Length: 218
Image (cartoon, rainbow, N blue to C red):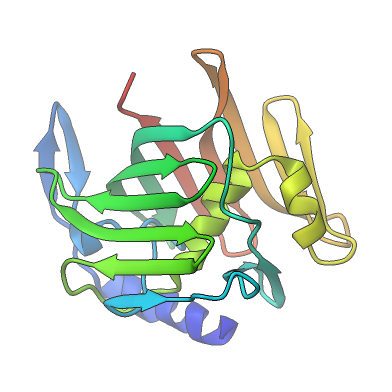
């Protein structure tokens, strides 16, 4: 599966031609409805995994797969964001709505005029994905959830899920995921916003992509 994912990233992403539209003084790329580097990814038009005992899995690095923590989180999160991703020298942006509470997490991708392009929902019944338009086949939706949950979920929820020898630690305004050899795999940078510690960038060293997060609901 990891080889298939990397092949899709290599061959699908460069072929996608982006165009830009204005958004309140910004120009937002809608090409690929915003393929955020190696993350904002959907496979197929609709898919669900229903067994709570078989929670979705995602790749932390080539050869290192992880089962995602349970979906619930408190306090709840509700945020509208502009994500800008850089991968293989290409930069694209996407509007997303993130909602998470003690029962589920949902992530919706929106066009510049507010039309929903896709919806990813993770609850106790499993992972559900919906696609409103035809997109090139992209890596699994669980990959984007891994980054979102790695950024927001407490470390205590992640530690039991990590491969043996891997570590996840908060260091000042950073959160660092390291493999069993101590090599930095993912680095998340935070900013204190309205009394909350919220992620503003994700650097994924294993798959070589970078995401910046701009909050639009201030």
